Image (cartoon, rainbow, N blue to C red):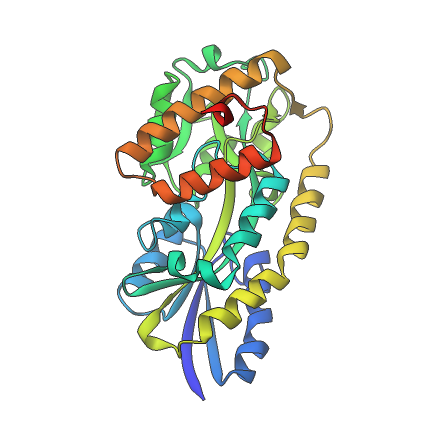
Length: 308
């Protein structure tokens, strides 16, 4: 039996939903001759550093944190690249094919599974902030280790207030920032309703699509380990989509704020221009960006980008 450590980032800790999913991997791994010692981390940065230092053989991180271990899968959360669930499902089905494995390997690391966390929405304390123009000068809790987020916030003329996955909600809830961004699955556990109520809103427009990734040190596992973890992750997809759908339905209808239809194409173009400039600067992997564009155009060929 191989004893291996698996470090799991879950903002709620050992009682959280991510740790619960990780626990289901344990008996399956046992059958493969691997005994996973599961460790919960509420600070994602520490989990990533322990993994890099070799103190964790495998780790579960957000797609943004995963970028330093695999640029291709770390680009799946690119701004505006995945507008909805249909595109996300197509993307996951593509990446789960055996021939996609080469994209999952980056040097000493391999991404052995990707799990969806849902669309990322802007949360505001003031629902009159309902257009890009009104973001000028507003304070946004921004993941300061993510060059893409920093660039986007500056692009719209808002001010970056450095935050991380552990403290962004507190900053939003106590009013030290005007806005924050997160998927619906964070609304209840991170108590974002405290910041949204009484005058705020959750803007119903996907800025990106969040995911969690299981990454392993390749030299510490048999070669077939990654494919069995990937199969396990694939078997959890429907469950993950159900969790996302439930979380979105639990946000009260009057909290959601829809943007005027006529402005959506303009916002899509704005996200596209920032995404392409980040790709040119080497922050996103061009192959991942092209793959997601092909998927967007397959779902909706009428998008202006699909003519080019």
